[in-house]
Image (cartoon, rainbow, N blue to C red; front, side):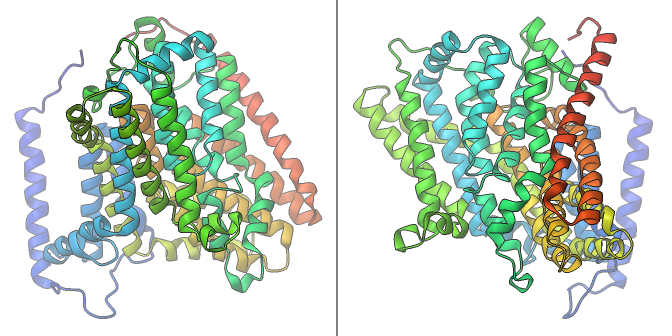
Length: 561
């Protein structure tokens, strides 16, 4: 049991004294500044390094305190105060009602509201599968065919690769299906969350038929005179982080390499049956898989298969497939959030008729699962809402302009190293803002202006932008994908972030080295021979993991709870 720590009276007095002094200063500042943003208003921190301060505050506090709600709120508060130049009234109104970044506006945004509805319906489906006994039945069936922890982890990776349409859909579906299996084989929830997260965005960013491919296609500006989809295909072999992460997944799973905080989680799961190793358990109410006599595996397989099929149909429907568009163009034009809501709602209706027809559960129990599903997803939804608010504050402070200036300053003198620079900047921006799509939407037009006549370097640099966006998204505690991976695995969110970070940073460091090599070859030869950077990067990744395994064996100690 975790020991509780308390602040001493002296510490409390110091803390409250600092807070009171800060409040008095803010009130005084409010009296000296306007209470509303006039036309043409520009905050003092606009497009400076301070524009990235709010997410940095939120992320650092979350990692230090292990508490994400207050950390996000404080990050939002810092952003609002920076935007308002210290004026309390303007900051308060900005946080709530600003038309581009306010909390209320984020909630009423069609895409954001659709994601919340989708998460609620997925939570309801998970509750139904647990209460019907189908999740437990599937776990028993799969445990006879999937042997050992390695088999359970490889099956999770394989399913994650197969569901390449959308990262959020991937996280929730893979988690729902594989959680009973990994639990039986004593795979920690933190490891499950990592497996889910590492096969979500990294798979989507190299899948030609996915919502991500569509986003990249439209991020390439028309003024560049480049076919966006063709450019996306050309970036796949240069997307070093995505490919390195997938390769790393296979190596650490097959060789049993666990390091960093993940090692403690895995050892506790194996030796003590503790799948959580501390942290909050926000999913306890719906984490128990009821064993119902006569429960059928098909009661889980049919809803999951229906979910996959109907979500794909929903996405191409929003893209105009049934109005004459080709399948590829329909995906390129798709509104994935709307499509996922349509598909998940149809799946819920199919599940209702299936369970009632088969007498799996009573009507009253089915309806009661709707409220239970909502309750089970409250934690990730609160984090999502606060993350959107924080992202909005960062946008209001002009983070995009600051990054634009950094890239332009690097372009003149460091063209050979620009892919690596773009990768690092993209990682930091996506990590700070929690949005990979927003990151490459900002950076791709900038990269296109740097290499207008060097096609191979343009491909490498855009790939570095996409790769860095996925990496930052993968690491960030305020990323939609990271939040939904925690929800899919029913893992404590901070536990997921802290255990995943060493793995993601290892892959990022190796990928950065790969982009240095790719940039050197591409700049010197301006030919596709730069693709040699991919096997070199994978080889380096393998060597690094072997060295890590040697060190973990050398310093292995008895696991402690």
